[in-house]
Image 1 (spheres, rainbow, N blue to C red):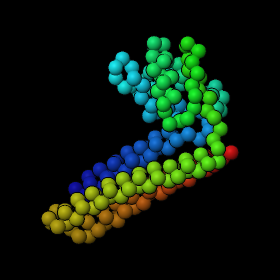
Image 2: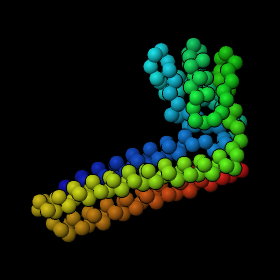
Image 3: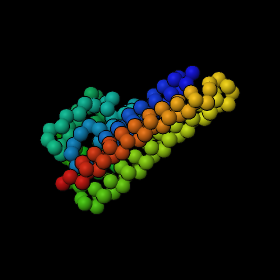
Image 4: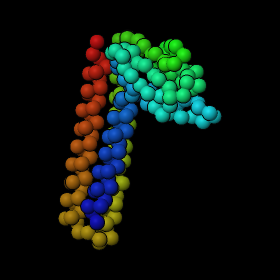
Length: 185
């Protein structure tokens, strides 16, 4: 019974790590990569659709990204969505593909992105702690109801703490790597 609770908490924490990875990938580093536009939504035939479902991406050099729409009628809408996105790049369209040149980051902008990464990391760590709290409440209830003994509850809580620490350390490590990548000139 405790194993199911611990397993569910670990799965939820793993999903939080994946969400952290996706969030960090969407923060610009001065290099072109498709993850920059992972959260861009394009109006396509009256509904909003993720850009990655409407086009393929090619990185031609460190700062240029080619976006080839599957349907060329969506070219204008894709270009508009790219212009409105937070990435801060100006797309140009030649009628078949959209070329996005990622501008160099200024020192001030790099520092803003580092703050953003720290905030995102802290938000995801709060999510981990929330998952831990819910699992601990479940374990405490099992002990109180007599479903498990106090020793087993204590062991499960120590295991839960170790799992939480492992995932928190992973977020810290991802944050440090992203910060170093942002500050690299």
